[in-house]
Each structure stands twice: as structure tokens, then as C-alpha cells.
Amino acid sequence: MNTLLDTLWYFCYITVELVVLFIVITALVEIILMYIPQEKISKKIEKAGFFGNVIAAGFGALTPFCACSRHSK
Image 1: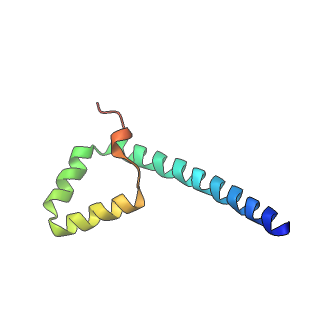
Image 2 (image 1 turned 90 degrees about the vertical axis):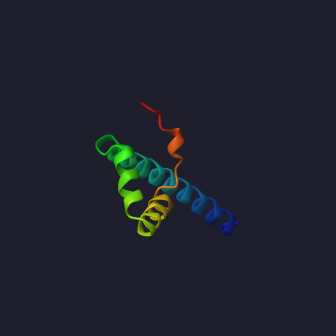
């Protein structure tokens, strides 16, 4: 029975941790996009060539949230 309680505790702990992480990362990305236009970021990455692809992949790995959920202006 102790193993079941430990498992449930761990599940709740990880769930809360991931929700907080999701909210913090989403807020940071939105704040960055408020001050730096997405077009400017795209142009910088396009100019960097292959290294730009590496940078874009890194940003995608760090912020795995769909950009299409953001309302276009």
C-alpha cells in the first residue's frame, strides 16, 4: 500500500511541477514576443544559414508550444 501512495504522491508532484513549468515558459515566450516581433526573429534566423537552423531547433526544443495558438495581429 505504501508503494501506491508513493506513486500517487509522485504523480501529483510531477503534475504540479509540469503545470507550473508550462505556465512560466508560456509567459516568458509571450513577453519576448511582445517586445521582439516574430518577423525580426525569423529574418535573423534565416540570415544565419545552417547555424540558424540549429538555433531554431534549440528554441523549438526549449519552447515546444505551438505558435499557431497565438492570435495573429
